[in-house]
Image (tube, rainbow, N blue to C red; front, side, top):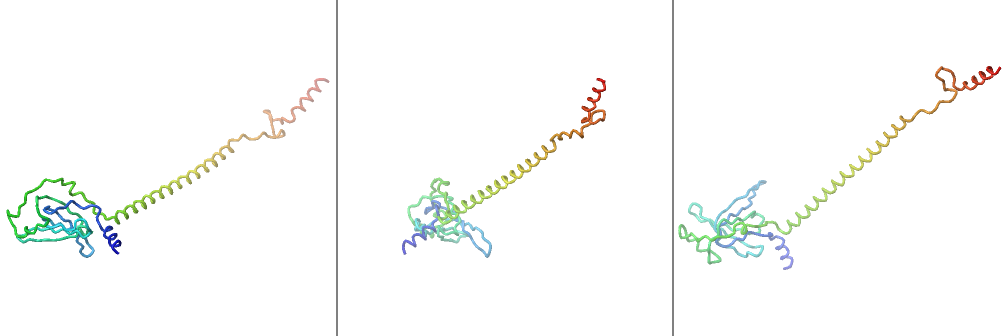
Length: 214
């Protein structure tokens, strides 16, 4: 049972969250669903508590003063409704929970600012292992679709090439049949330039020779 719960919790953990610490001034981007519409609401304030930071039940509590009234909100950091946590400022603190900030206001509520690498601290990946696996599967399926479409196009090109080659062969055959020289006419169809039948010329020459001999 514990192993099953551990697997479920592990699958719900985001890959990487921002390096949030107590005393940071943050902007929490929360997803709000209203009917069929969704919007993102930003809540900016001071982190006064960050409990169970290494588990799926990690809770962050942010406090701000609006119109002289203190307002606090808490979120599960790994909740899908928490789109992003952006760190704006980091302050020096000595306590794990800043409950005393609830009784302070004005100058007494100010804290010494601390320098930090904002880009590195805000680096995060809100995807869960399940979402990462689904994205990998979708990428593989998309690549398979592209490959299949390319193969189909290649097959179409090959078929059109075969048709073109066959048409060229048939056209070449027709050209050679038209270019063939006409066969020799029969001797009885041959006519000399004078209009006489060429087949009778040898007989006429023989008669002329006999006449000359006489």
